[in-house]
Structures are given as structure tokens and as C-alpha cells.
Amino acid sequence: MAAPTLLDPNFARTVVFMLEHNDEGAIGVVLNRPSELPVATTIEPWAGRTVPPSVIFLGGPVSPSSVIALASVSLDDAGANWNPILGRIGTVDLDVDPSEVPGLDEVRMFAGYAGWSGGQLEAELHDDCWFEVTAELTDVHTDDPYELWWEVLARQPEPLNRLAHYPRDPSDN
Image (cartoon, rainbow, N blue to C red; front, side, top):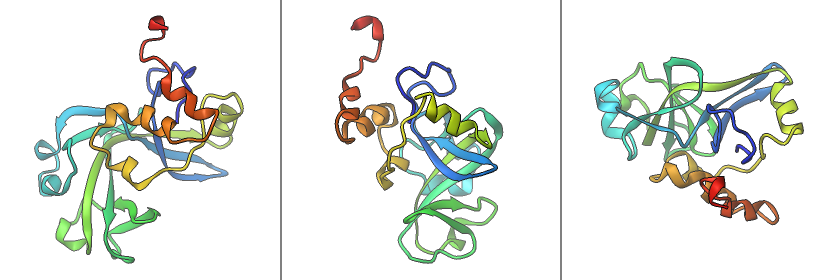
């Protein structure tokens, strides 16, 4: 999650769910930037499976015309059209009908993603731009994405949880 000092407009006060991180780089999606675009107007077959708010989220500045879908499933094996990431959360193939994903529960769509080249994220972590925190499954499908940054901070151990009181507008401090 972004440190309060990270002022890049693409990432200020964001919570990023990491999809992949290796020597070649990292890929994730921003969990707390809903757009105004309803899923039903773009990916209609999946609209009934999305969790509210049922809009496309702004997943990050890279490849904004592509869509990544994160889905939760109720089975240990949801078949070839679902790729596990964390527990019962994974990516799902939007080219198939939702009925072809056994145990499918909830879906959230992200336009674009956040990407880092090899070593770039590590350098940003070293510069205290980001906090490494453990995701909870409810973070991906939160019904209040605007509060997610503060909620994730609040559940962290001290002293990090103190930042949950960080003002929304620092000039209010």
C-alpha cells in the first residue's frame, strides 16, 4: 500500500493487490479506485457476478484498455479458467461464460494494472514509498473502496496503524 508521502497521482493513497512479483518485475491492481463505468456496459455476461460497486476499477496506468478480473471461488479447484493468486482469490478468463468457472462467487474488474520493472519496486520499497502488508480476502471485494486505504492501515500493528489517522487533506492537520 502507498505511503502517505507517495504523491504520484497514479498511486497516492492506493492499495495494490500484487498478482505477480519476481526478478523480472511486479504486476498488481489498484483495489481502491472505482470508475464511473458500469461493468454491464462493457462486459455484460459478467455483470451479474460482480460485487458492488459494479463498476470497472482503475487497476493502474499500464495498458488501461485491457481488463483483469479478480474472482473469488468456493472450491479448491475452479478449473482451467481460474488462476489462483491468494487463497480463493485469483484471476479469471473473461473470454469464457461465467458458468464455465466452477464455484465462482464474486468478481471485480480492473482496467489496466500497476507494473514495475525488475528491481524498481524494491527500490521504491527501500525509499519508503510503499508499505508491505498482508492482504485480506475481503480487500479485493470491499464494498467501500474509498475507505480501504485507511481500513488496511488501521488493522496493522503499531506504529504503522497510527497512519490510519492521517488526514485526508494534510492542510487540515
